[in-house]
Amino acid sequence: MSLTLVSTAANVGGLGLGPLAAGVLAQYLGAPLHLPYAVFGVLLLTGVAAIALTPETVRKPAVRPSYRPQRVGAALGERGYPGAAAAGFASMAVFGLFASVAPGFVSGTLHHPSHALAGLIVFTVFGAAAAAQVLTGRLRDRTRWTVGLLAQAAGMTLLAVALHVTGLPVFVLTAGAGAGVLFKSAVGLVAGTAAAARRGEALAGLFLACYLGLALFPVGLGVASRSMTVTAATTWFTGVVLALLAAVAVLTSGHGSRTTR
Image (cartoon, rainbow, N blue to C red; front, side, top):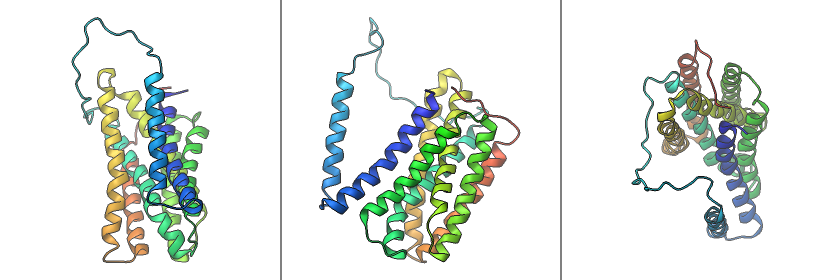
C-alpha cells in the first residue's frame, strides 16, 4: 500500500468517522456535549496503549541522539510545491465547510433536526473522498490532478446552486470526491519530488497549509455570517475556492507530477 494512500486515507477517514459517531451518539444516547468526548477519550487511550505494546521494528542506536522537533519547511524551490500547498489548502477548506456548515444547513434550511443525519452527511463527504482516492489510485498523476480539480470545481458550483434552491444531494459526493483526489495528489507530489533529506519538513509544511484551510475558512465563514446570511457567505466562499482552484491549475500546469508509490 502506497505512502500517499495510507497517509491520506488515515486523515480523511478519521475526519469522517468522528462526526458520524458523534451524531449517532448524540441522537440515540443523549448527553451530546459529554458522551462523544468520553468515547473518543477511551479510544484515544486504547490507541496509545496499542502503540506502546507494538514491538519496535528498528534497532536502537548505541548512542541516543538528542531530540529535535521536526522543522516545518515550505520546500522553496521544489518543483510544484506552491501548487501542492494551494491544492491542499483548498481541499481541506472544502472539508472544513461541510464539517461546520452541514449540520446547521440540514436542521435549519432542510428542517431535519436529526444529529445522526447531520453526522451522516459529513461522513458522506469524507467517505466520498476516501473512495475516490482508492478508485483513482491507478490513474496517471497528471490525470489525477485534472480529475481532482474538475470534480472539486463542479462540486463547489453545484453547492452554490443548491444553496439557493434548498437541495442537497449530488454536490456532497462531487465536492468530497474532488477534494479527496486533490488532497491525495498534493501529498503524492510533495512526497515524490522533495529531496529525501527535506521530505519530512516538506510534508509538515504541506499539512500545515492543509490544516490552515480546514480551520481558517470555517472561521471566516462564521464571521461573515454575522453581517450577511449563511447562504450569501457560503456563495462567496465557493467563489474564493474556485479562484483558488484556478490558481492551482496555473501553478501546476506544464509538468506532470511524480508520486511515491
